[in-house]
Length: 506
Image (cartoon, rainbow, N blue to C red; front, side, top):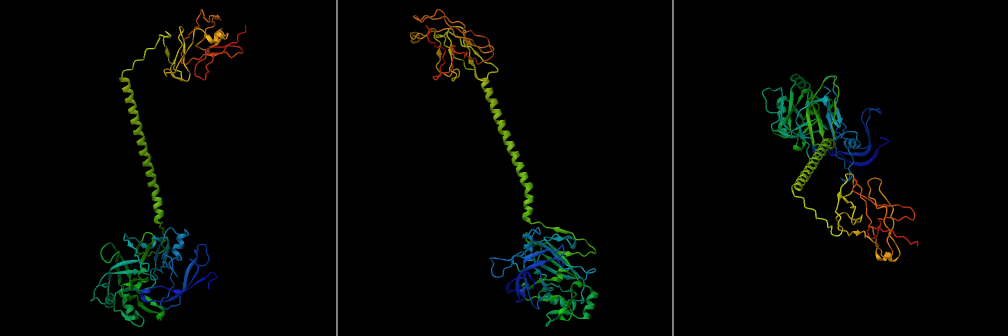
């Protein structure tokens, strides 16, 4: 008993129940390994289900290749199989395997081959026939055996079909036999002088019959397909050497590995068939293939990994997603270009329409009060709208800076004399030194005559001199020297202040 063994209890083995096997086994968890000893190439799997048996029904140990979990007490907590453990630990790319039993009679003896997660392409002749996996987990690798033919017979006068009618049969390496219906077994008996031994439950071959069969060397062709009739088929040819077996338990007696099936559930192509056939199974794609095994001296392995279909879809979706993204971007660009063209053409049409329509006449300015013509000058460097210039004679209108030209805001006119309330308080309108803009600015008059306090009249009217300018915006600014009258543009009522008030020093 292994030091790492952890017992789980005694349970029914559940192998070949169709034949009435009721063997029990001691189950436990332990480590299984491939290879010999603890070499660097050894593959170790811990906590795997192992069953120890003691029976005369089975002479060889078995390694389960199924992908489903193992249920001992209930179906809620299945224990992983070796294949699923390899996949879950990312040791193989898919739930698949390739197997052939090997042929000790070929060349110098050909070992069997088992590949997890792919197949060995050097061990078989490929074909295009695919088989679907059956739903019964106990009989999943089922093929339609459509016919069996032989190249020669010992009784040449009896050429009845070796398989009177096609059947569905299960490929299983647990047993060496080929289980066929009784009428098929009788055809084999008649063609090759076989005698069934009831005590041994086998077709024993004595030395004389063995000599005759070796001399005849019949080759048996098994034609299989995905169904019992029709569809694509593949031929697996078995030489007589593959049927020439020895039963060590029966005193090393030779036997022909043909067995009578009691019912359809016992139809099996066993290890004898798999000596000359290569079986590849892909559980994730629910299909498998059967090919003629190939035997070549000093052939090199050609291991082909089979990726999971889910991983294959992820990789194949990358160029698809890139194509979708590129197509979407192209559509968006086309739509953006169409929108731009539509707006561009609509703008051009609007401009043409405006150019074709007559320009509405501007209302004539009212000169009755001011008798000042309105002048409009637009400078190419101006960042604001057109600003009206101040005419050099008559009354001057100043616009509130918060109100654009023509907005309808009230203007304050510059009176030609001080208001009476200012005259009464002893103020006067004196010289207003005004600072002008550096170039082509608007300047106030340099001298304004002093106004008489009593009459508050003036013999001279303040005027504004106009200088030519390319600028549309003109600004009056007063000097900031102490005691100097200030020409201000700040007012809470949004009106221009033009008067400077002084305390009468007299």
